[in-house]
Each structure stands twice: as C-alpha cells, then as structure tokens.
Amino acid sequence: MYHPDYQKLATKFKSKLLPIKVALFDVDGVLTDGRVYYDGEEVGFNRFFNVRDGYGMNVLREAGIKVGIITGGNSLGVLKRFRENLKVDFLYYGNEDKRQAYKDVLSQGYSDNEILYIGDEFFDLPLLKRAGFSASPPTASPEILEAVDYVTMARPGMGVVREVIDILRKARDIVPQVADF
Image 1 (cartoon, helix red, strand yellow):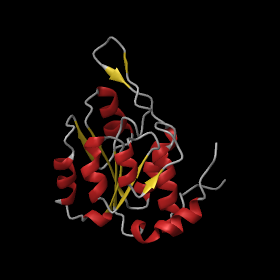
Image 2: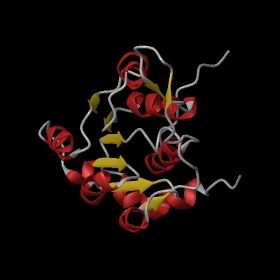
Image 3: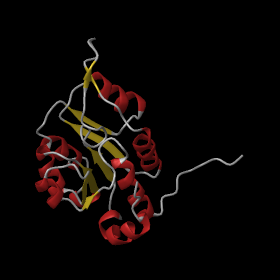
Image 4: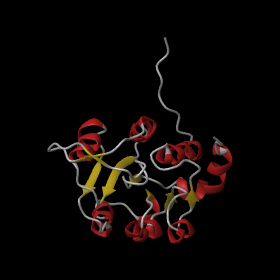
C-alpha cells in the first residue's frame, strides 16, 4: 500500500495543525470499516478496531492533546473500547446529531481552530466544516470529500486515524516516548 509523505503533508498543513488541542473522531466508517456484526447476546452490535489508531490516540494524549469520540452509535463494545480501554477525554454517543457534542467541547474552553475532526458521513459535515483541521477516509460521500482539508490514503478501519495523527505528530514534532533497554 502507498504510504503518504508525512513530512510533506505536515509542512503543507502546519499552520492548521499547530493550534490543535483536541482531536475528535467518528467511529463507524473511520475507526471501523463500517460493518457491524450482531453476536446474539446483550452486547449487541460489535465492530473491529485497529490497534494502531488506539496507540496513536495514546501518543496524542501523552503529548497533551485531548482525545474524544463523537458517534451516533450506542453499543457496549464501543463504550468499553473508548471509556475503559483507551480512556478518552471526551465520549459522546447515541446521537447522530453531533452538533451538541461539538458545542460541549467548545464550551470547555476550546475554539474551532483548536479542534481536529475526522468523520465520513453527512451528519459529520457540520463538524468537519467548523473544525480547524478536518479529514475523512476516501470512501466518504463526494460532499464530505470536498469539505475536508485532507482525504486519507488509509481506508476505514485500516489506520485512518493513525495516518492523520502521524501527520499531526510530524507538524508538531511529537515523538512517542519509548523506553530504552
């Protein structure tokens, strides 16, 4: 698979990425491939997540950037992944109208230009248009692709979030902390 030139993209988007203090992500079609499966139990619909996206979120949080999820979905698997496993700073779920969740983040002292948002569907459009930096996977609708700052090379559920995080990391000179032997 082709990998983007992260340094070139970081330079291109640097002025939009430097102010970022909050990174917000949609789930279905961004962090997952959009498919759901029903396990027949109380858990309900489940999804597959890419661990590289999760590690990238942890790297951002270690660098002082708040991380959040805004999803219309409402499944136990999503809640467990983001509340218990990744312990994101913001978690909004169960409402396809995502504008109130975005306004709630703003009310905590942030401005539009300090927010990065990745989404792929029509109900993400108001947030994509307001965020200081916006991105979408290549499978999004044409209206979404035209509205965002960046369209990823990665497909949904295959590192979309990590690709954007790596561009942000390069623009901000964020190096993950790795222990030596």
